Image 1 (cartoon, rainbow, N blue to C red):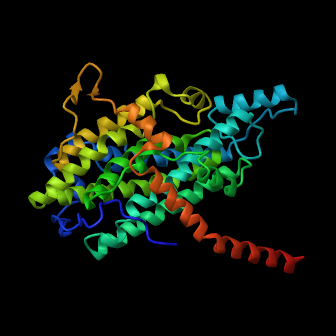
Image 2 (image 1 turned 120 degrees about the horizontal axis):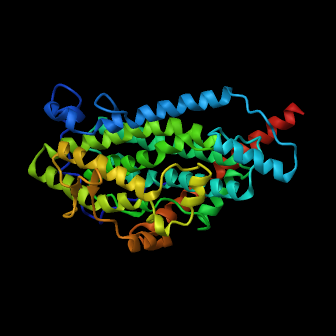
Image 3 (image 1 turned 180 degrees about the horizontal axis):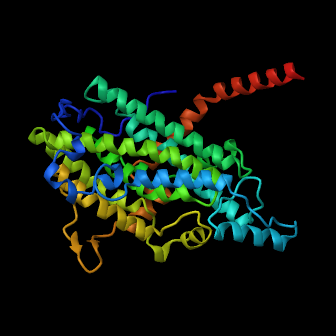
Length: 389
């Protein structure tokens, strides 16, 4: 498989003003401003501060999953269509988990396949924007960290494809639907990574948005999806730490480094807001998905949580969120903010973003280049089956 294509213009080396990888001494970078710790919500993600962190919520969801697995579910269905539906509805209402052995409505199955497959595709395509910076990271340590992160994303795709397979769809079928354009991936990965600071912005903003979106999925009504999300969310929290720390280092470096960090935040802020999907009034799937407890919060609720989380984190970074209308609304207890350009979101979803064609061309090439591996694995499996017969 060939190298990941670069997103930067030919002949331009935008990594030369990258950081020197020197960190301030003492406590964790996220809490360098100790006097302001009680007023800063960085630990709404990471813990060790005030209130319950998102990681605490993941731990709570994991305990609930174990309790649900041990609980008896009395009153099983008698086999009739009406009773199967009754039992399904009662399991959902009781906040228990639907498992692969259970009867499910076809619409529930199709909705889950669509969502889980899109999530899996996003993890795989999402390796590309960061993968093209592995060879250009400013130090060996940065290379190793970024390589590990990209490998994590591949693992996340594997967990999710495996969860989707429990719904009776083959992984090969899902991959083919992505290649044919019949399934989508997150629009955020159709934007270019022009500088090293973009890797920090992706970690802080893109992975931060993913955490806000995905932590509630740890309580998804479908057990295999919820269990996959437990590990994914724990690993994503480290990814966001990595991005935050890159931006902190750059923002406290030279003037050129600071300008590069701010430029990356300026470019990634609104696409990150768009990751939560269209507004609730234009969302096709949210209402039914919430009724089935596949998702727990609406697109607009999650977007608001993300903005509220980021504002004080930006103050720790010393970088500005590029929204002149961003201000605290005491009556709502949240920040007012400018919505992303939803027309742009729909253009990108339809294939007209800055890097859509490049991302899919590379995915096609990687799939074709890997054919011999799949063929060899299939031949080996067939040989083992023949020997066992």
